[in-house]
Image (spheres, protein in one colour):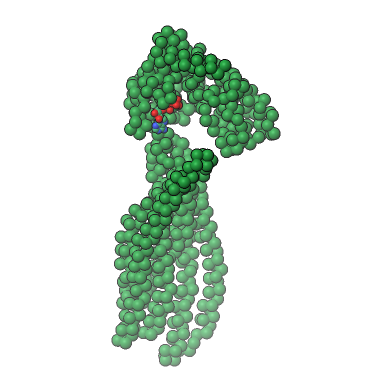
Amino acid sequence: MNAIQNITVGQPERLKKPVGYTILANLVNIIPFCLSIEAINIIFHAFDGSGTSLDISRLWTLFFILVAYVFIMIVAERASYRANFRGAYTMSADGRIALAEHLRKLSLGFLSRRDPGDISSMMITDFTMAETGISHHLPQLMGALVMPVLAFLSLLWIDWQMSLAMFIALPFAILVLWVSTGVQRRLSGRQIEAKINAGNRLEEYLQGIRVMKAYNLLGERFTRLRDAFADLRRACIRQEALLGPFVLLSVTLIRSGLTLMILGGAYLLIGGDLSLATFVLFLVVGSRVFDPLTSALTNFAEFRYFSIAGGRILDLMREPEMKGKDIAPEGGDIEFRNVSFAYQDKEVLHGIDLILKKGALTALVGPSGSGKSTLMKLCARFYDPTSGRVLMNGSDLSSLDPESLMRHVSMVFQDVYLFQDSIRNNIRFGKDDATDEEVIEAARAAQCHDFIMRLPKGYDTMVGEGGCTLSGGEKQRLSIARAMLKDAQIVLLDEATASLDPENEVEVQRAITKLITGRTVIVIAHRLKTIRNADKIVVLDDGRIVEQGTHEELLKNDRLYARLWNIQMKTSGWKL
Ligand SMILES: Nc1ncnc2c1ncn2[C@@H]1O[C@H](COP(=O)(O)OP(=O)(O)OP(=O)(O)O)[C@@H](O)[C@H]1O
């Protein structure tokens, strides 16, 4: 049951109906089989020398039952088909949504360790495999077992010696298959890994094709892609080559039952311990029973393979979500108490003590890689600190419900992601139930309204995947409009005005000024002149706070900040 449970992502009860219909359909399919047994009986009785005449009317009755069976079969098969497919597709659609919902609640630390290709392959391929397992292999497996089990029970009652000869090799076939499952788990896991790796390399190749052409890297990147496909080919061949003999051996063992039965039957016939009618009956049943048994075996092997995909899904579903249930307090100071943080085992923030005052604008500055973005991400609980505590209004962030915390935080990052949706809905993302007027008001405040009105369909214009039809500055202003609409107490700005042309920079700066008024703001800005008026400037170097104060205080200190300031003044002077 574990494999089935894997696939249904913890909802095995949803399989009851499809499995029930499948068994019903297969029970109905036994009718012609029973009718053939009865027909053999009638015919043999007419010719066994007992003087009984051929009972034509009973044969006609059997014929009419057979006709009725065809109709019953159509109804039962249709019900089973619908239940199986509907069940499988509903389960995988619900499962995909549940998994996507779960991913949202995992820490970014976990997600950044996982390859995105691996997760998207799980969402598409693993669920498709689970679907196929449920809609094809599971019913076929169940169906293929119904007939042999019933045949064995009824034949045992007719002649136990013949039945034993027929099925004696079955336990050995099952044993061989059971032994093979361990090998299969290992090989299939390897093959799935190779498949994901090949998918990732292909994605990398397609996404980077422009850069590769520009730098003439085609040779090297193509080698990586070719190696990945070669590895996949090896994994597939190894799986088939090593598993094939197991399946073949178990099928041969099962089929040897027919030979054993014929041999045993011949001896029993000669010894007078078996009637010819019973022998023929066993031959007819035997020819009908071994095919479904063989198909049950091959289906089981395939079902196991598909259930590995279910296992992978379940492993991800079991990954613990970020802890914390408390409702986040309204705004307040954010305090770092002796906070250190490591990505995997590389510590990038060391013993940070810092208070970010409510309603104040705090700027984080420092050389590239000094830990500014990481510190900011800890404020929004993208990650939990490795040691130390981050407090909001005295509450430890790690005890707060992440979604409740996010209601108080707006973020404007440099790399703005826009969804493939209308401009209106992209802004409304900041507040689901915002009215059109509220959206427009936010857009006006974020200096977006004018450029939106120039677009072909205004607020209803669709933005492409990732918002590629808008300029960098326009995208940033849209994300500021989102933040405006969200109206959160804490605003995190990450290099919002970097790499913009002067006109866009002025617009974005104007929008930002409106956004941050009266809020707690933490900003990362490489251009120090934009944060000259900050209430506090925190200077980071190599994951440590090396100085903090106002612009004037830090200039007086004449240390790292003063050095960075002087360098920037000189370079902007050159530009002029
Ligand atoms: N997801 C990650 N996994 C591993 N290491 C990371 C990750 N993100 C950042 N780092 C490393 O952590 C250190 C701090 O990075 P961070 O992005 O916080 O610095 P930063 O000061 O914001 O840099 P920049 O100004 O260039 O954006 C760097 O050494 C960086 O390589």
